[in-house]
Image (tube, rainbow, N blue to C red; front, side):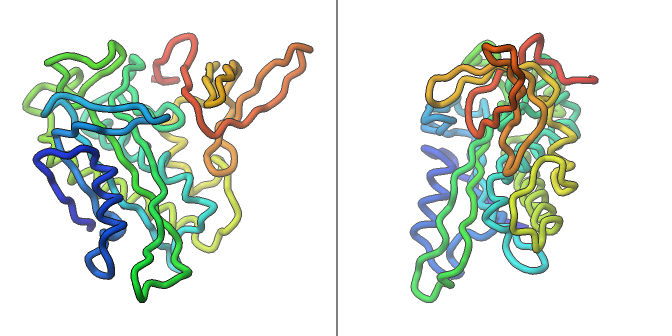
Length: 281
């Protein structure tokens, strides 16, 4: 099991973990499943360079170093992009286990049944070790950072945010440090299963591969009409049909000539249209 470094406060748990990965060598370097957590993050990072912060005690910030290995060796580089979705799905399953009606919106938002955001996840490539004596052929890992809203009674950062206390009696809400320990185990174990199930597979796989069944089970975006705001400013509307190679979202759109084409998007802000409640639940 990985080791959790719990901090009274941090600027960004993801930045802290990346600094430790860059500075340490040999046995001192954080390993697979090691993490940094706090209930007082003051300069967190969201997608597209956005700032993420919450009052002390309002949210759990946790970052985990993932470099899973299967029977034959480390997870192939072609599959590293799946780790964000795999980690997000693990968070959703943990919250469901607590009694929170959670589901996953592509690419990495954990929402409640009303479409309010419980948790966001951000993955950053962690460089391979470069200290003297390190194996030059080692593959990089991924640092997955997550922010779980625990108690927003002091104020919501946005109206569409939700917290565990919105769904659980106070006595059933886990302490942030306890939740961090559980998520550390869950996320690392999910990454290990991915590496095991894709052992020896070097080419990219799509969302229909059995190794991604745990993602598919909680992902609510396929089958929905969505609007995606892409990094270059383009806005795309269509029906999400599934996940392509590496976890990209396939979207069926109608062109100006009324022809149907499929676009694949690898990044963007996605909104579920016509409601945001999990399909079938």
